[in-house]
Image 1: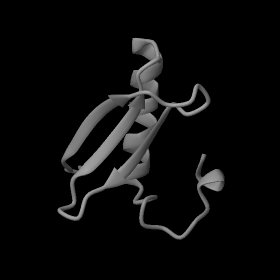
Image 2 (image 1 turned 30 degrees about the vertical axis):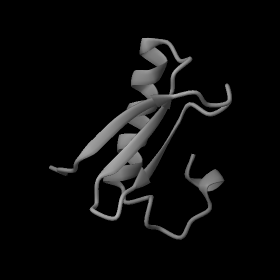
Image 3 (image 1 turned 135 degrees about the horizontal axis):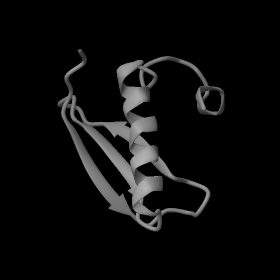
Length: 68
């Protein structure tokens, strides 16, 4: 089991960006979700971001386009 603290922040984003995650200095993850997404699409985007957190993708030195 992986336990982490995350704040979900719906914000305006370009249509092609569903969500992204940034980590604060205190270790809290901020998941920014496109506020134009349907509830289902937002849920899928959150699951995708959770996977990045659990897999430690945010600290790996791998270009973002390869992680998708």
